[in-house]
Amino acid sequence: MRRVYLDHSATTPVDPEVAAIMMTYYTEKYGNPSSVHGFGRETKQALEQARNQVAELIGAASREITFTSGGTEADNLAILGTAEALRKKGKHIITSCIEHHAVLETCEYLEKNGFDLTVIPVDEEGIISVDEVRKAIRPDTILITVMHANNEVGSIQPIAEIGKLAKEHGIVFHVDAVQSLGKIPINVEEMNVDLLTVSGHKIYGPKGVGALYVRKGVRIVPLIHGGGQERKRRSGTENMPGIIGFGKACELAGQRMADDAKKQIKLRDKLMNGIVERIEYVKVNGPVGEKRLPNNVNVSIRYVEGESLLLSLDMLGIAASSGSACTSGSLDPSHVLLGMGLIHEIAHGSLRFSLGRQNTEEEIDYVLEQLPKIVERLRMMSPLYDQVIHSKQS
Ligand SMILES: *Cc1c(COP(=O)(O)O)cnc(C)c1O
Image (cartoon, rainbow, N blue to C red; front, side, top):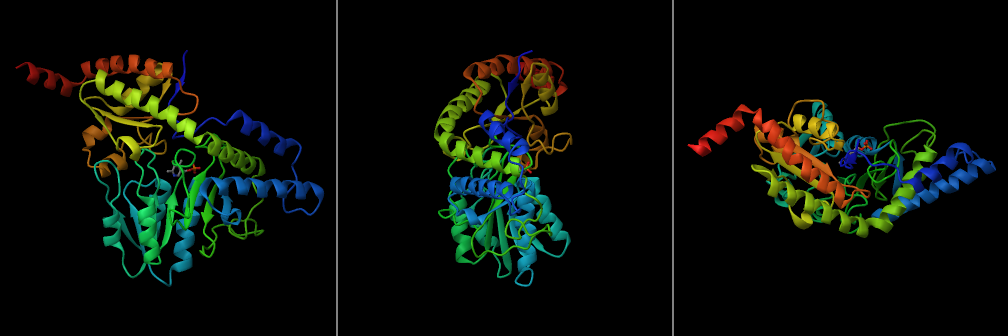
């Protein structure tokens, strides 16, 4: 059967070049980077090179990079680590209603434990207003945590402006950049970011590795205590193959970003416009043009359920998503789409296609050929759609 993978925001394949270099760190260069002998020194040097590769992609110094077990841990380290470090200074945290669960749930955990939380709404395109953030700031605000690009609708947030605001008020600013890394340029200096989360497996690197950028001088309390690795910020023997792979993936992403974006924007627009042209009662979710990630398509198709669409697509070998991978399996509609003002019924019929390096125009044609047929078949079974057709005719 034909297989078309359009779920790159959930995860990506490991680039063959990345996989090849990782392999040597399993079988040949297996030293512990904390060991003093030659085996250890060899891996220590490679560890620092990988740190440099990650730093370079985001405009940071390599000593500001702390490797973690992924984006989720980096988000937790940023938020819990700041809350712990600054709890005597204040107890107010600001976030947005479209954050990834790794941020939202962590903030809510703090709220249950004595912190105050303000959750900023977004507009109908899924973009946070800088003014709303400004209005939410209090004398006891210690942290603002906002994502760079949203994983469900691809909306890109005004990070530099929020960063400026945070700096003016002396508030620590954390950004989850897992979805934007390698897709659009990131510069922690220009964006005035203090803490920035990145992850390997969304950029053709391995799963189970990520990093937190911590600006020089910003204090966070570690979550994991032990041997004092990663400048005491994250103890535990380093996941060397993972870290090496992540570093390589960052290097490749830096080289390929412009080309990837150009190619994917073309496919994205072809898919998005094609769906709108071929299917009635469709709504595009998220912004159009420059405020949207190059690889994201998100549509609500009325009078059908997202889950049924996904299953039908899957039977034809097409992998898409109903929102975020983390919430699939639950029947609640996406908190992001609800936050953008969609009613439950419409949010339920939503599909996310996220493109990647290997997708081709022909694959998009295949989706555009199959999807309208699926929608038509599902709508035939929908009593709601039946009513619409009849009210149109009468
Ligand atoms: C995938 C993702 C995460 C979690 O990263 P993991 O490495 O899978 O733990 C966090 N934030 C965003 C926006 C993501 O898309």
